[in-house]
Length: 252
Ligand code: IPE
Ligand code: IPE
Ligand code: MG
Image 1 (cartoon, protein in one colour):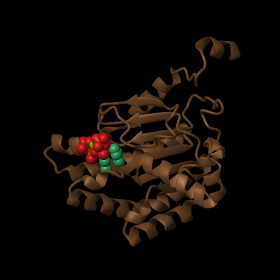
Image 2 (cartoon, rainbow, N blue to C red; image 1 turned 120 degrees about the horizontal axis):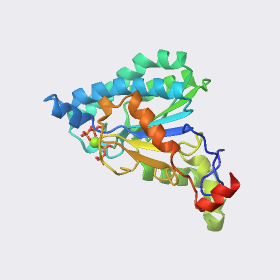
Image 3 (tube, rainbow, N blue to C red; image 1 turned 90 degrees about the vertical axis):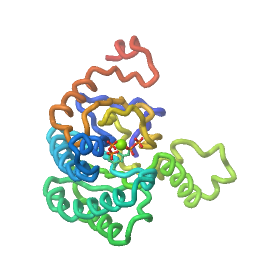
Image 4 (cartoon, protein in one colour; image 1 turned 30 degrees about the vertical axis):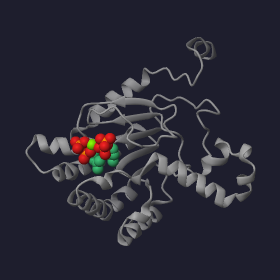
């Protein structure tokens, strides 16, 4: 298990070990060009490819991308269907390349809502890349931060029913192994493209001490220079985790 930022002080490195991104702005990118919103999603897939490559080169170990939220089902049905098709096509097309790049793929979220064929593709892609360790790429699909905390609580109580009679024993350490990203350290850096400054029910538990970076750039336009600018900003942050600047200076 990785240390929790509220129970221990995480290590700090110049490059974020775990980068979590809300890929936003596909629709507006397309609308600005008088294209259907879906054209923005298609272009967005190219950005995913680019970002995976750049992060691999920069030494990021965990990259987590928010692809479809538990609230995105509220979108027009044609847009939801296109997103699902894109997901299937991308998995089919990209897994070989990801595998060759040493990427270990994880898909987290409530996958039971997806078509059986998509669920199968996801499981196969995960199994295929399971032994890789260069970069852990997590796609959050039908994911919601609240769902995650609730599913973790349910699974914890199923595995350890005695906890129901001993609420004092329910603490972070008991719950953490059941969160859907228990295999990863908490994100060091969060990026949201597209100009909005909100979390939109992303990793609400795990972002407790993450540095938050917002950029107006739409996701289809997001590139290596934008990543480097975010990393540069990240390097200037003083990550205090509750302590004072003076304490940090004296422990350095
Ligand atoms: C993000 O882009 C992609 C998904 C949510 C699937 P949007 O589709 O939210 O783009 P905007 O925010 O409407 O521009
Ligand atoms: C968040 O983007 C979800 C994903 C990027 C998958 P949205 O575009 O759905 O977020 P809101 O609705 O504007 O907050
Ligand atoms: Mg959006």
